Length: 250
Image (cartoon, rainbow, N blue to C red; front, side, top):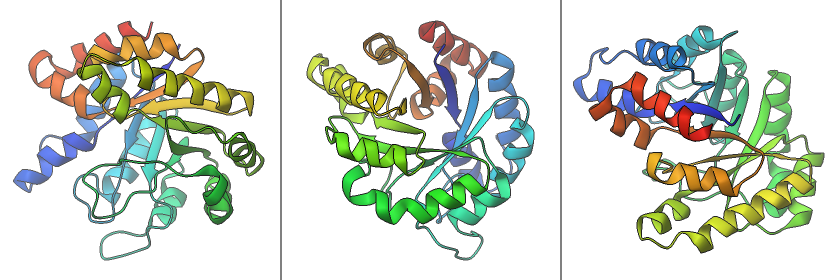
């Protein structure tokens, strides 16, 4: 079955808005794991707008031996006050998976992926560091990526997976015209699979649009869902919402 990895960034946003320790990240992770999710995802940005380095360290210990732990971020993000640098945080946490995303401080959220042909060479040192930490590597890419040579280069460099950016699909689904974007995602998945890469997906996936996406992408390894899931949980509860996503994935 496709793994559901719950992104806890929005729990941290709510906590940080008050400046104390509630809601508690560890409790949220425990509820999600008890409900049956297969992974926990965090995206620790250098500006610490939501998940902080100490959250990453605690969640790494909490998830170890129970579910997969996935850290997202920009591999070129260096150290600054209170933040050790992305790759150093990976070395400390030793997650199951590291998802590399070409984001910047100015972005509200991730909105584009890597170009595999032009970016693989400069990513190689980061890939080596991630492998040394015992993690597999996934690269965030745009739907419609049609460069077979790029996929092959990524596989040769040790990339294990790609994560398809599903924001445009979610927008098209909300507009009632999902088919073109859905096919772009499906084509990208087929090319990745042909190169020996597993396929993850994430960004703005929700209970409404996940079923159609899952059906269109055979062999989908993992979905990382946070913003919609946490929003829906405000009404139905976190445990019930995670279980509903798992039902859709089945």
